[in-house]
Length: 199
Image 1 (cartoon, rainbow, N blue to C red):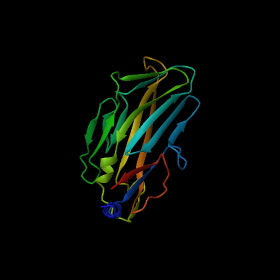
Image 2 (cartoon, rainbow, N blue to C red):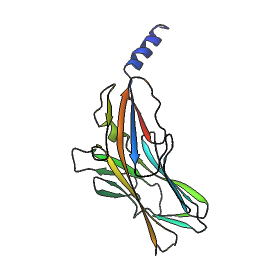
Image 3 (tube, rainbow, N blue to C red):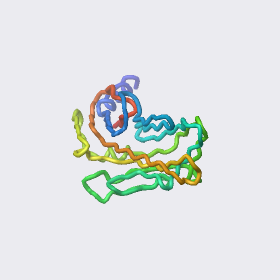
Image 4 (tube, rainbow, N blue to C red):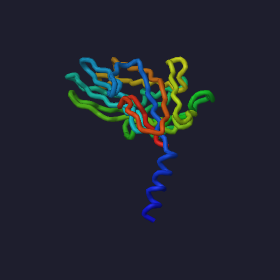
């Protein structure tokens, strides 16, 4: 019995594989760091981790910041899905593209309020199942440009520094899957920009 357990573990591990899906964006980025927009009034970061994409915001200004999640959206295949929808599934009409993603803002209100010098960890949308659906053989590596990528999306945020949104601020960023690797051994990949899947 003692010999059987290590054998079973070896057999299990030999059938395992590690998939790394690295993204690029029109946002500022550095290896092992999230995608970041950083100016005098706002710090916005998109972190790709554990099958999800997380959105973090920090208000660096001296005035309150308001985020309207009802008018902020995840855009896939030119179809807009409000971030306010809780666990909304978006189905793509284009069969050559990934078919769905899930987005969620776990809040009862449509607007977030950030006092000066405060931040929130808010939106999260899951792309793990979507990436699993794209074919990739063991020891295969795929590289893509913005035009050839099988998965692209935009994140559109609707902000304002006044409660009535009289002078709204629009932030629109694009992301695309740039390369994929599936290996029988774990690899070192840039954290914050790579979604890891284990088979």
